[in-house]
Image: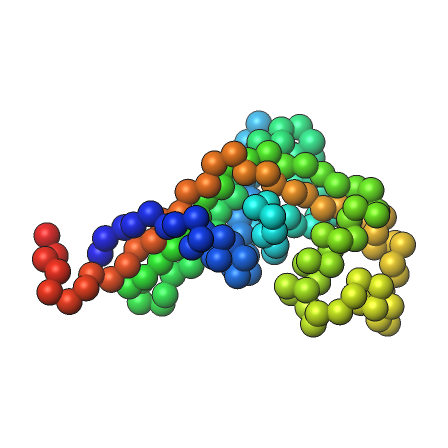
Length: 157
């Protein structure tokens, strides 16, 4: 099966719809890869994380990251992969965090406003805002490839 480059439009659509990506970074001089839920908006990747932990520590030490998203049909007759290299920025100012959290709520939860979502039982708006950080990855390079089935009559060599 031939491997083809994805167009910019295909990459944008794939990153917009994909549910899980993998963040690659360096933590204590060692590679670290972790799956994250994310949103793709304005050509940037954004995800939320805790204010303390390996992701934040790694990004503070070295903001150069890699981000990967892939999808394969169960019989492997078609697959897609996008790899992005970029710089991660940590956003911790509450007023700037909320619009990014809203994007994630819209993608992963029943769409509703941030304040309405945070008023649900068991939610503590201020406590959660104190604990969460948003990371925004600005891409320097994005590549996308797809494995597509051969069209009937195409030579397999």
